[in-house]
Length: 337
Image (cartoon, rainbow, N blue to C red):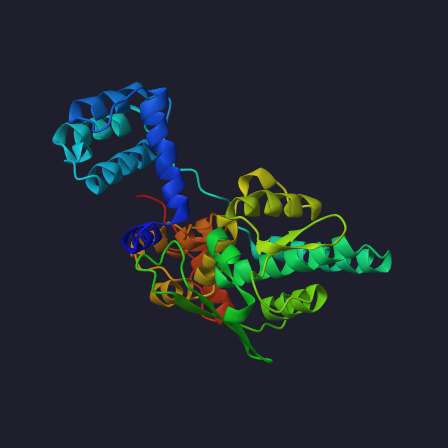
């Protein structure tokens, strides 16, 4: 491989390469399509799978086809007007509500944190090193993931040598590359030390228990307590969280994903008066639309917010007047003449 090829390959994310390769296999092998393709061929492909695949999946297939054609010097058929109109028609005839992960609320986070601490203490008492290590790792992962609003790819990219701790203040971590870092410039994140459910102390406890001094922060642990040299895979975070939440007694674990930590923090910050710009800067969102997708209007208190804007009833006016010590006047009705 030449130096040029090495840098070209490094420009594309590994996950993107894998997903694009899978999309192209579907087009060529399963659908028997030919590359390079025409706009008419791509339109027929979309129409054949319009009812079976979501619009987002079809859009990803188009991105893979577009990438293949442009990288090989062929005209991009996915940009043709026919293809755009077919996609518009698919969204019209096959509308689907976007599925979003359930946000992890603060009370659920506290439940998980309490369970992990008690489970770790019980494991240490019975001499179960593997379980004790796993609970220490999971507590650091959940608390750091929540209070930093990390995605799963950011959690698994954390490395010990890129994290600095200021005792009693917080920690600073550098991630060389993540999903939101399109130009691979790297980004520095800060997280404060807290009085409870503290991500910093949980991270320190995990390092002390594991004895790790460099390399990936979060790693697999076998049944004998051996810690793997490589980091966890991003795809392993969702089943890990769901097993953990189920053990802690959290309901509806199937509705949670790795985005639940990020959405939970965004909702907590929004409810506690954070400005949108401040939240975007802390989490790392550069697009307002991306941030808005994580901010749900809580149904709790919705009626109260509406009632505050409605005119007061006559009874409420009387009650307020009585409370203020103001004289009240009784309405006298005179008989009609």
